[in-house]
Amino acid sequence: MYAVFQIDGFQYRAEEGANLRIPLQASKAGDKVELGDVLLVKAEDTVLVGTPFVSGAKIQAEVVGLTRGEKLMTFKYKRRTKSRRTMGHKQDYTEIKVTKIVSPKA
Image (cartoon, rainbow, N blue to C red; front, side):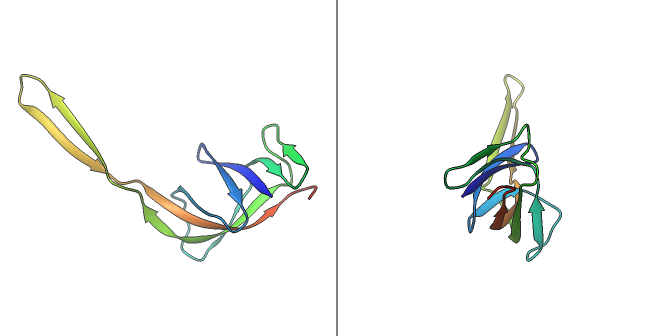
């Protein structure tokens, strides 16, 4: 069984027991979270597709920790002016472990 859910404009495929890295949320390690914007739920032979969300479906997860992504480097350059600038950026993420997928007809 798996489900596709949406959070902060990104879509993720979740299976029970899977670890996912989602955009930073206001929660701490060990917190239980419930994700309700489920777009699709697939059980053994049934597929439920929402319009846009599947009513009654939700994903229960536990926050494993807060992480940061790899460093991305940007370089700005303007010709003939000796103007150049290098900047780096690291994105913050929340790592979750999916504990249960609740389906309305599962």
